[in-house]
Length: 444
Image (tube, rainbow, N blue to C red; front, side, top):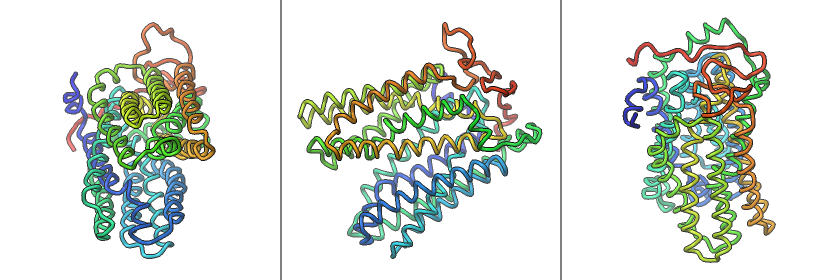
């Protein structure tokens, strides 16, 4: 089945949710690389204030994710997601009018609560399609988000100028509008989601974070997600640039080229590989993703030894292309496994924990890279990252992962904790549960 046919076969609510994600990702692309420049050069604040605002956003995003996960299970994913989107709209809109440091910190705090709360988004996508279609909808989610993010970033780079402060204000207000539009689309999509019926079928089953954290297979998936973001996806924005600055004569244009290559390759790989990835067992997909990052770090280590800027840039772009192939596998497998480990009663909390684990990786990875680079051990960090990626691939193969609606790996014997059959569960004490209900109609 072609990628186009896969998209056509998605129910209308799933397509609407993908549209909403594309809209918000476009807005994020407009402002994502600009905050430090805006606050320091545009508003005249200190660098510490700008980086402090970013750190505060990370802290409140952690809180926002926890609260949103609880709210999604208690009041429904649509309400939780819309509240988070509106909070994010308020927070990013506040940036347009900051004139004092406390206002910037307030905007950062509100924005963090909002973007942290959007971690329940995967739960809505999971509710929009049957369980065996989860990899497809998650794959499209990744591709749409990356493409929209890249377009937004390119437009911002063309339109925004420090000499024209109003251009910064305009993109932050535009970002706020995208969150509001996404909330409206989410409400429309939510009318056709079976969430309320599913929760009723759970028979009043109570959930809590303690209960979710007792799910061993889910914890295994979250550990892999944390490691993948620590040594992989978090490194593109700060970890790899820190290494390059420490050991080579890197320019800002070189970093921009790397980010552009990553976005382009990610979208291309997602489209080209979707027919293959959706048939690949999820534990194999995670192992492939980790191994592609190992290849990236090994290639980077070799390029650093060459001393040639041309060789270094060429190697980085080649390494990013390989890692983008892994991202296509990761983006479909990870949320599928998380939602396979959850019931309708705790889906919000499970997806919130996924957001939190990857956010922790997004913080820990660059911090470790910077620490090694600051102490003259940038090459050591590259070796450590490569070894960690290899270890992550091994963990993906040996840890007990959640059962999904995917077929078992060819030639793999049926053993506890390694089943991919629908309706099976590897969690101790959890009885068999049916696959997610099929939507009766695609009409909104």
